[in-house]
Length: 199
Length: 199
DNA sequence: ACCTGAACACCGTTCAAGT
DNA sequence: ACCTGAACACCGTTCAAGT
Image (cartoon, rainbow over all chains, first blue to last red; front, side, top):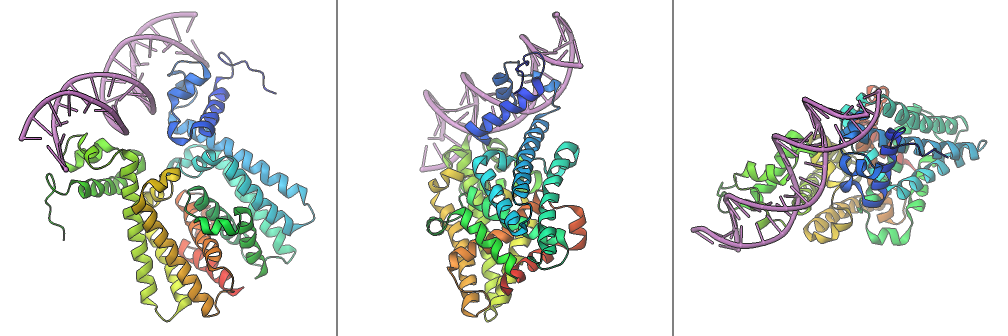
């Protein structure tokens, strides 16, 4: 797809790509600017031509993560255009699937920029986009009388938080084996959502 | 309360205490073994007499965090001995309160040991204890017919996950201002739980 | 405009040595 | 048993210099 014209050329994206790979293969603790530079075949100070500091590279990687997540949500929404309930359940499944397939990206997405989040407009934009997608699903469900009426954004936070929390606990290994032997993460999340729908 | 007999004596606890303070004052990014040692007034290699590596110190700090959280949950449970619904709601409030008052400890509790979690028995024990407290509240609510019957541990994961997720998103700054202007975190969490109770 | 190399401060960890 | 100091590898960041 992409022309490999870096070394000279598309270094910025090469660095992000290298970062994503290190995250996937070696985990969050091994991600360093120097290693990313090495992997891209440039000197260890070259990244500073494209990112002001390590935080800035992390912001770019997180942004990439949110883009993928947003795409997965979008695909779930479009695959079930006339079935709000299915949109909600499959959207949540897509969220679970993304998190489990990209554990370290998922972690960095929800644990880095923090206060300085606002310093990275691209990050803010795409993370808000994901949230809006969730709100839209909730709103559609409300219109279809599947979810009780009320402020959609507050309900969206509650539903999103529910899905997010179960996954976060699972990824950190906080959910006991005895529970996971009974039900898979996917099943637990689905059960949680069906409970939210019923009321 | 504690006799200040470290320098020589209770260095292990002094290091944990120093770590907690750095976490509270300077945040997760500034926590280093060398700084902890400096703060405790010992050489930068002294910690290795008590902790095998940085992970091990972090495990001890996390354990301390879970002890505090567990204590807060216990207090909420005991304050409302004959009112299961109140136990559930106040337990969740205690969770929120703890997280907001100890943001960086909360973060480190849910983002460090990971795979190697099992290497730290004290950590495993106290984190499981907290989970059991949640299960017990759920079970009590079931007996009082406030929560639908079913496997208490699975339901506990769902409820715990819900509370945890909303807080985690909030701490990472992922919840938009427009939502937080309408409702406080405390209110959102309460609304979430009441929704779970109703069904 | 983009990249390199030397330099500095800081970190985790090991090891031989001190008490 | 507990602690120190020197040493090593690795890291983020700055800066003067090269193309």
